[in-house]
Image 1: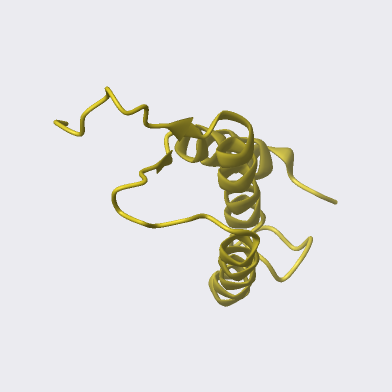
Image 2: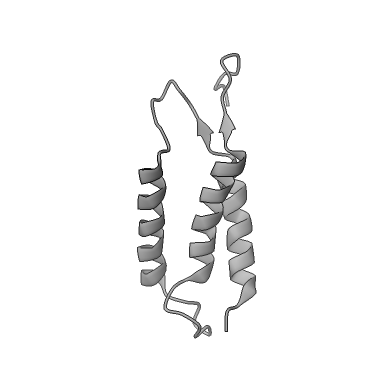
Length: 91
């Protein structure tokens, strides 16, 4: 049995965070496919080490954390913001 609450909330929060990630050409940081793969592998390892919530017995992983990692990747790919040349980083 999969509990929907942590999965939905984790994905939603991850999606919001992922949509806020910016590509900044001045920093020379690029989000390539390898970055997404490494991020997802690390998220799975951490989710396994966290384990499920104490009363959940559906899997050995923290489902909310995996959903948040997927949400970050999906949010970045769909709504990832790009900085235009006239936009400054004064925040």
